Length: 168
Image 1 (cartoon, one colour):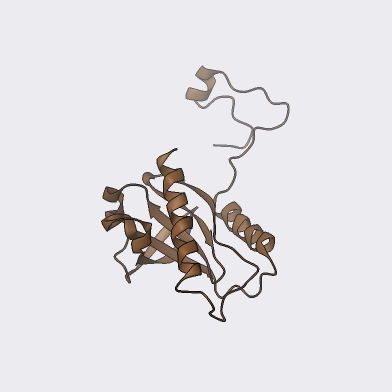
Image 2: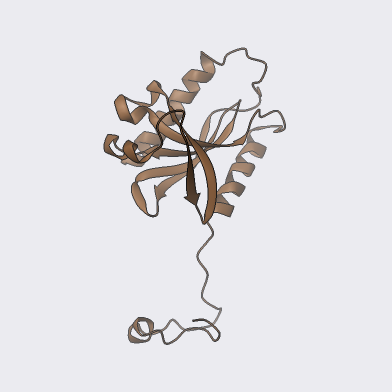
């Protein structure tokens, strides 16, 4: 199992436990929803941190998660607000800590609230669709080559030739 997969499993397990204990019976819970991590991937500029969306019955947050303890120092301290640029968008995030995520620095993460409470989502499918839409907007797909255009030669690519007309 990869380090990323292990951290995402730990994230889901921690918030499932919170749902079953600390949050159990609270009226702000949407009973049709479950804890689920969506689309977690390493950050393009910092493979030591991963980000994705966490859906729970009480919130949907964009989360940054350290993959190893030494990566947690790049996250804001718990309770401290910070700016985070993701997918070319500046978002405000807040440092947080949850001991169920792991020992010491592995308990830290950063969050950006997307939805809370979650009552406007009828079911898990609609919440997941919203999470995927956020990820689609923040992780634009790479531009595809024009249909029928041959790929540039290696030399043409290296020297900027073989570009479609009108591209720098």
